[in-house]
Amino acid sequence: MKGSRARATVFLGGGRITSALVAGLRLSGYGQPIIVHDRHAQKLRKLKRQYGVVIEHDLRRAVDQAHLLIIAVRPDGIGQLLDTIKYIKRPITAISLAAGVPLAKLRARLGPPVRWARAMPSPVCRGGRGLTAITFEPAVSPGVRRDVKQLFERVGQVIEIPERKFDAFTVTYSSSHGYHALAALAGAAQRAGLDRQTAMTAALWPTVFWCGVRARWHLMSCCGRLRLRVELQPR
Ligand SMILES: NC(=O)c1ccc[n+]([C@@H]2O[C@H](COP(=O)([O-])OP(=O)(O)OC[C@H]3O[C@@H](n4cnc5c(N)ncnc54)[C@H](OP(=O)(O)O)[C@@H]3O)[C@@H](O)[C@H]2O)c1
Image (cartoon, rainbow, N blue to C red; front, side, top):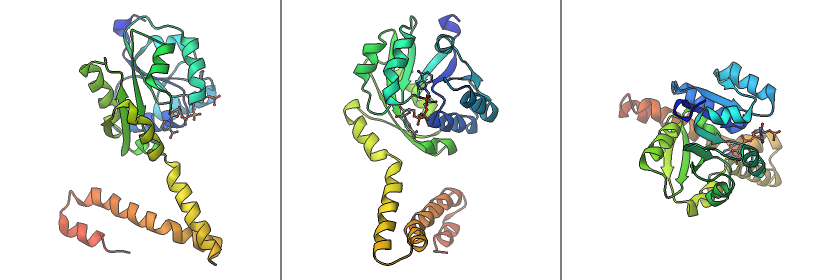
């Protein structure tokens, strides 16, 4: 396909974060073609069934159709993937989701005319209430930055940060922190004498409660403060 006709958003890697992003994009009414490439045919079939993505088994054909190319493989697989792509001869925006892989390393594998960005979304994008940090190579134009931001804004809030702060953001943002914190709290409660089920329920309850309040905040803020105050009463 000629560069000028390439207009799809293409995901390389059809795993957990691709599934979350595609779900969020569909929820937002995103109308551009979405193509996914992965080495597991079964994952691709599931994404096609659930979200109507176009599946592409051939890596080169997938890349050739991309306007935005989202690299969604695990960090230890990104080198091999980029080496297999080898070259891209037209201007294209590539967005790596890989944690801890700097722009310099990406550029060293796949140089100009590829314009590189990194993004760190979360699985919460699935429901359209995500938060995504984005960073760009310095030379990336304002128009390209706007395109990338607009894509992620469809699935939640977006913040642009300098790359030197990106890994700190990633570590702080990790969704596994919540689970570790709950497990540690429940473990401490068990050591203090609670049975496991009571300890887990007690540890989890404040989170459930506050998530409930937040969900209502979004609903109720449209409907006036009186109902919001009522909703803030503990159940
Ligand atoms: N999951 C999250 O919440 C999250 C959030 C932000 C960023 N990220 C980043 O997003 C990236 C993907 O994470 P994930 O959790 O979605 O991983 P994942 O569930 O393992 O999905 C990656 C998929 O890509 C496939 N793949 C890897 N190399 C490939 C290749 N050369 N050709 C074709 N397919 C290939 C994998 O197959 P195999 O399983 O056979 O390798 C797997 O199906 C990671 O770099 C991660 O740091 C993830």
